[in-house]
Image 1 (cartoon, one colour):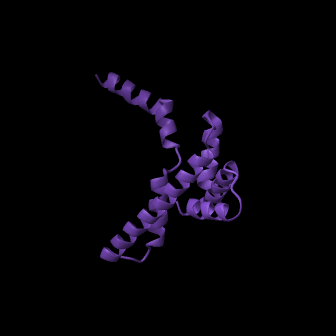
Image 2 (image 1 turned 60 degrees about the vertical axis):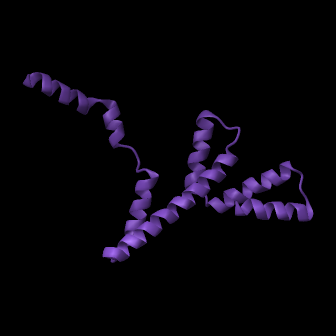
Image 3 (image 1 turned 90 degrees about the vertical axis):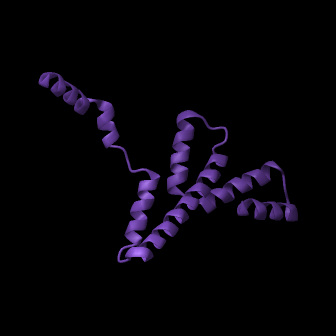
Amino acid sequence: MKTFLFAVALSLTLNPAVAAEEDKAPTAQQERMKNCNKEAEGLKGDERKAFMKKCLSRDSSVQQDKMKVCNKEAEGLKGDERKDFMSECLSAHPSQQHKMKACNRDANDKALKGDERKKFMSECLKA
């Protein structure tokens, strides 16, 4: 019985999937938590709790905005090309730049000009 348990334990430690799981980069939520914890140094009790709640929700909404913009820009991309684009888009560039690029592309697709384009851009950038 001991030999069997040893063999099971050994197979789990040598399993490449388990090893790969340990080498994964932190998730977006873990990164947000890390950043907010760093900003909250020195705060205690209710003040820290309130700060963390606000910080985590702020970072989450920024990430959601980035995701919307990047998804819109990635339309038509598939597979590894889409995956690579989304990774770069979400991590490397501020969401406002991507939003501007996407809105400009949409305005060009609709052949908008002058006041009509200004109005469209204003509404698009607010969304």
